[in-house]
Image (cartoon, rainbow, N blue to C red):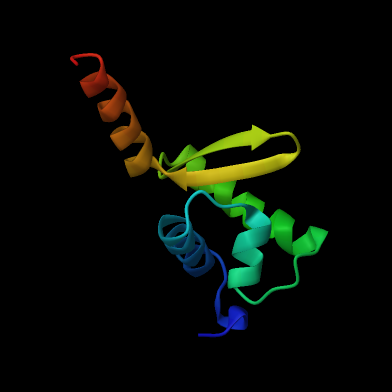
Length: 89
């Protein structure tokens, strides 16, 4: 699959797949995994998909200094369950 064939929903699905496989991750890291130059334009495109996925409740994001970090929402659910179970010990 080439990056030229990834646009719109296909790119969104690929970004989500890479986030699920490599969490926590950054838009620049996703660019590298898609064999894109990690320049401002490509990072902005990937960040756009991070924002869409966050709005659809597929991933969680947080800004650490100037870096955006993302991970799947399933991991967040596991983290909350872990904290809940820890309270019973």
